[in-house]
Length: 96
Image 1 (cartoon, rainbow, N blue to C red):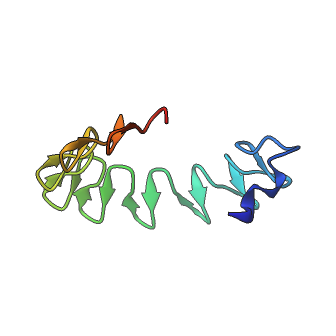
Image 2: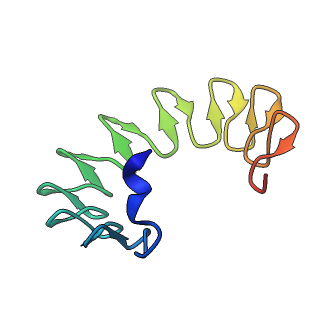
């Protein structure tokens, strides 16, 4: 990951080099627009945050509740049988 080369003297979350990275990537509003589409809400002509294609992406991916469940496991909390959000394996993932 050589993209962190400017981390030392620039606000990385806001600036990546000399562009406002969090808001702009180059000359487009990256958070809202990627090119000429509203990226946060739309990717192409579909509501990306809520829908990816014709499924509610934030909640459902296909016919499963993606945010909470991936397949039949609680993805946000558990990945398989471990608490993924807090623990990845047996370590505190969020902290460690």
